[in-house]
Image (cartoon, rainbow, N blue to C red):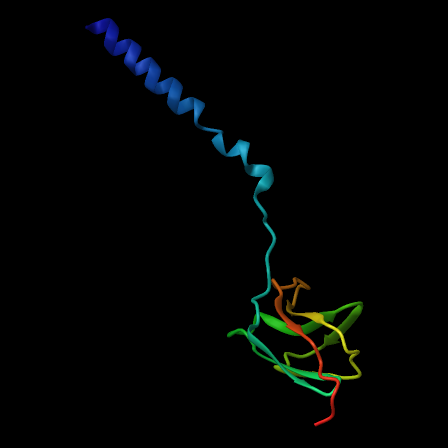
Length: 122
């Protein structure tokens, strides 16, 4: 009985010591990246070769700037705007991404909308 206690105690200690560095298995996959908060409720109102983008900015003062990206176009606003009019668009589909940027230059996860501008004047 005494031998069994020692073996059991040695087994418990071995298991506990063996589990100490378990996080080493996945440490390389953990992202320590900090993101700016994301815009919400992104919508697009389509017009003749135009699209009016509107969204709700995140609460708080962490987000400082807005970036809009579509095709090879990058629109950078130095302030936190909540709408933007895209003009002179071709008659094709666009996937539009809206990002916030914080004071350290960190980008948010994008809000995205797919648009197809109208080819007929109203």
